[in-house]
Length: 184
Image (cartoon, rainbow, N blue to C red):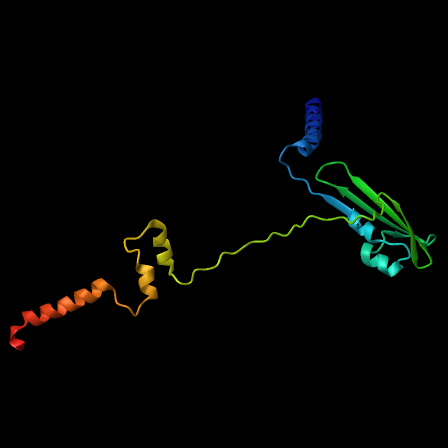
């Protein structure tokens, strides 16, 4: 009995520990991107210029991750990124000051004189002009073809009577006059 309980516990622990390595490598399983520290990119470093004040550097880079009391002339910025289940990438930039002015940059990024052009993530959408001249039913029936192609033209020209209607109303008037012999 004790031997079977021990074997069951050992088999359970082995199967649970095996699942942890399998679950991280399954296809289609989403893992979050983990970003830590100050986000640093090349465009931020390119904005830095010698003799900038600490206040200007704070505006561009944000507050430093590490500002040592023993090394007040040095600000350290760290950025760690681990995209969904991949290896972590860590970037570091150290800024050196002389008094209140920026003197140098050291680390994984180097300032360049060429501006970094970022691709636009904005999407422009052209909205077609609305046709307010026709009703929804006229628009739909126009898609399938209609028996009366002049419907739209007649609506716009409401003062002018249709030729068929004008002729038919005149004929109806004559018929009414001829049918009623008592009125003569």
